[in-house]
Image (cartoon, rainbow, N blue to C red; front, side, top):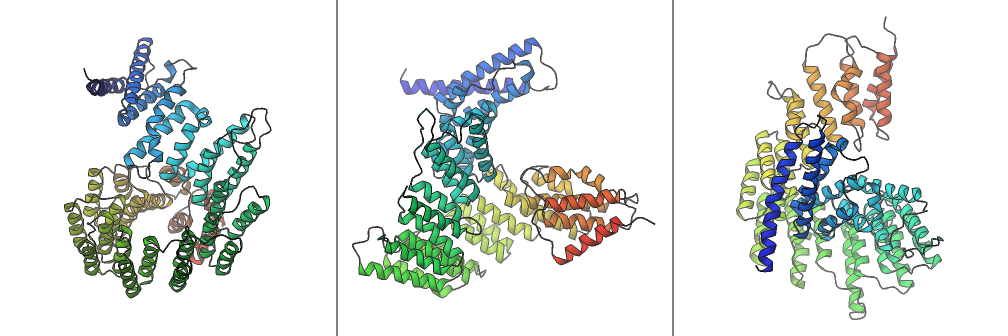
Length: 635
């Protein structure tokens, strides 16, 4: 039998065997509360041995979906039947998991992996951490893809907590810093730099320095910080909100004084961008002068950063003036500046976006004509930026004509992002759901696959007009196109619409409110502060709808709705939360209040949980009035 035929036959065997084993293992867990007998323990052991064999074959045949399912079933069996397993038995062998990991790691390094592949890879890595414990953090073949994947999935809190676990583990092992390579440190610093995590970047840079200058007898495997390390550290300060320009400039000064790494033109780019965001035009000019005095050539990246900063500040005039300066420098030294190329499509796209935001349609049309005359590439970003000129004014027909024009004159076929702009024009601004549906059907007819943004736009439009038939349609479409996990923004739009309809409703079709929310969102998933506030509001509406003359017990109400679960983990209450509760208590003041002093203390505790959230004057007045009333003894 040829080798390729043997591989296919083995793959079929693996798939069939795995399905049988998965079905058998699932049946064996139907009564998890019952203590397994010795015979069932033996059977579970056999199942695990068979599943491990199947897992090895799935890895050998490069079948990630099957490998992920089998691995999850192995962990599930061992977790469920932990009492029947030897106490020292690991959930999985470390070497076995690292071999499995090699099948999923590439997902973290691919620029645009599918959402399904990301979720699958993340699930396997999280199960690996559960199975192997923090010992897995000692292996860089796990750490590098794990950090990269967390970054791609915007799991920012997990990024911070994983770094914290790394530091703690290093201390427990008697090291001053995690013993990682410069490559891994730079991956972590790059992520902290991208998101502006100043404190974490400072700590990681310090740990890198300690690890590279280790005085242990064993030679350190980490090299000292390089120019990339400094660039990411500067970026962390420059990308903070608001930009920490002073501390970023100090890092540049320290880098120059220490001489450990020579500043490059690249490191000035985030500094220029931060100066622009801070509208510190004087510092931006000084940075340009510093580069010229040091004999550095201003690069296209430096000019683009400055133009982008002007654009974000709404200063189109200075952005265009800087563009002219760029062109003049090129005209004086056309062949002597390899790092300073002519303004490219990305620069003009930025200016087009600025014109759209500022409503300067004529200037936007001039920029497009300049691009066409210069023979610059017209990209999808160019198309959407130009269409945005009309979208922001709800000019649907003109927006559609622009989309058609790019196809006819520039040969750019219709694409998903362009249809998203059309949908936004009809839905967000025009609020024409009939036109919205027609545009969506046309999009499918042109074989453009909807994206998550597409569904956000559709839900926002239907939620705005409280069209729940439309929302149901979108939810079904999301499932049809493989979006099994609802996006938090979509969840927020739906939650707000459900509560709005309940407040405006004149019949009982929208009550009780909480079950309707659960129908769309589930009882605990997709949580954000906004969604949790909607659940709280829904509970209050349902409570108020019931006729009850018994004494009002605020603490009992909070307990009955699971308030602590609504605002747990990364979800914190805010000023909206507090105001909802204050008005709720205020409305029930006419009834007898059980435990008034405890109610007052609980409101004060929730106020502290809200952190720096500020109440407006009206809310502050309600807060003071309610607390004063609760403090007064009953006559």
